Image (cartoon, rainbow, N blue to C red; front, side, top):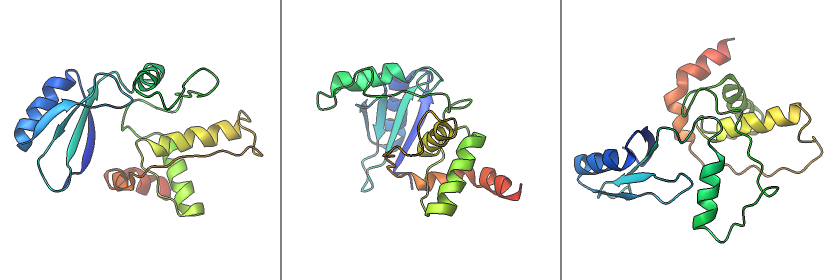
Length: 168
């Protein structure tokens, strides 16, 4: 059973329309941080949705345009330089592709705190936070709020990565 999946595509609108037809549902724009995203929704009791974003949405260096887009659709979050610090050096080779830092961060938080991070978003974000603290760019005495919004079910798609890391 699928509840929410995000996939890249060259033509997000067309892919969402095809998926909606296959699901017997409908497609439409996906209002979120990535401009040009669309979604296919099944007419089921689970709220199944497949977000389709452009293939260049998660390449290193592409995080600022989505933030500007988010700021343009939300007046509740005043975004400006100095308010948000964009650090995209931990994305790795691409969306959904594991990195050594992500693997270390996910295993570290699971072992030390009992917190399960997803390997796609939160795991890479935590890897970045850990790296910035280790480098001294964020002082160990600073109070940092890390928002983790779920996604632990994504761990099951990466069992081989974590099994291999735990052996070494």
